[in-house]
Amino acid sequence: MFKKILIANRGEIAMRVIRTCKEMGIKSVAVYSTADAESLHVRFADEAVCIGPAPSSESYLKMSNIIAAAEITNADAIHPGYGFLSENAKFSKICEEHEIKFIGASAEMIDRMGDKASAKSTMIEAGVPCVPGSEGVIPDFETCIKVAQETGYPVMLKASAGGGGKGMRAVWKEEDLQNAWESARQESKAAFGNDDMYMEKLIEEPRHIEIQIVGDSNGRACHLSERDCSVQRRHQKLTEETPSPFMTDELRKNMGEAAVKAAEYIKYEGAGTVEFLVDKHRNFYFMEMNTRIQVEHPITEQVVDYDLIREQILVAAGVPISGKNYYPQLHSIECRINAEDPYKDFRPSPGKITNLHIPGGHGVRIDTHVYSGYIIPPNYDSMIAKLITTAQTREEAINKMKRALDEFVVEGIKTTVPFHRQLMDHPDYVSGNYTTKFMEDFEMAEPEN
Image 1 (tube, helix red, strand yellow):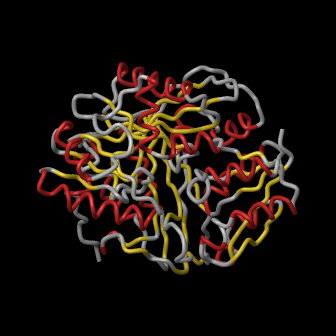
Image 2 (spheres, rainbow, N blue to C red):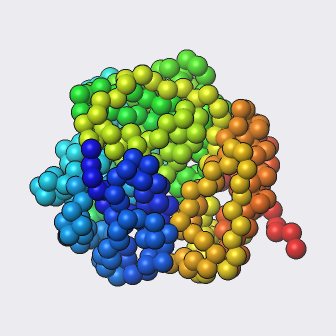
Image 3 (cartoon, rainbow, N blue to C red):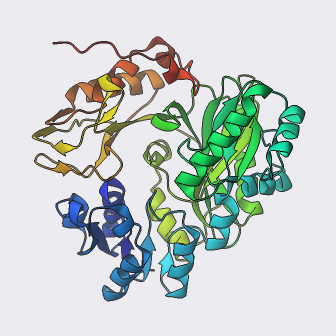
């Protein structure tokens, strides 16, 4: 087992990893930028090393600084969290070269599944259902026209190196294809340094449902059922729940088996997520694989009583998994609390938290790194907390979330708490009748004076 783990991340996920390290008797090392010197992860780790100034490119993405921090503290493993370098094949490889265990996927695995066109062709080989479309990267616009005609409109152009909705364009008719092709490639080049594109059939009224998997070094994998991530804004998830209100026992079984088949086909090691689009007829199609821990992992932990970070560490240390699949025994919902103003198109709201009251009580979990007096820097993702409620039924979990949101007081900045409170009363959300298009018609009611 590892003696010391460096967490190459910040904020709530760094705190989350530190907690499990402490429970396992493993020393932890926090790294931080100058903007994060007062963050809780710096305070609660056993050691902390400043790795650079505020910009991510000079700190949390600076591989040489992170490796140096690991070497001077004698860390024998690095946990990358999510975002930043968590799915960076080069970083995984550098860790291996320095004989530091990367608690995540191998460089080969990240390359294979990180490129979406490559991942899709691999899943077709594995026999996992995939959305009809191009077989890999589209080489030129002439081929693009041909693939669109064969696939049938509407189609979705996607950046092969994409993520977060960048480089994606829905195209409903051929005359719009060239503009979409050119703008998507430009956006992808600017965001990822890569303008490779592929194409898929546009699934109408889709739900975004992912399956949590864990694989070990023996090539065996298991799944921990699904999470419904369909409530999104600009392809960024806002809230997630498990089990999905759209799921049936048969669909859960079939999607779980497909996810395990995918993981075992590529001999996946670690915690990961196989993400699917599910149409209104409950046909499901592979979308992508995330080779890291997810933001929304706590809801899975709550319904199956399972520490996913602990399992990541055990698998990285060579401990085999039990091999059994897990199914939800309770219902859990997560709301991402961001420092944004939902009344002004979710405009970022960095600044000082002047007063903070965090909700509690039975079935309420908060993952956060902020406190009263904490200054939220403008340099990073705006998420300041994850509020998770768990109960026997979905109705009870929603009612518990309403109560918890009413208790959640954050002063000095704007947050998305009011949005989530309105969401919990929305008839379509309450009935479970929502798709990835839900937010297109959602309008915030005016705040009460």
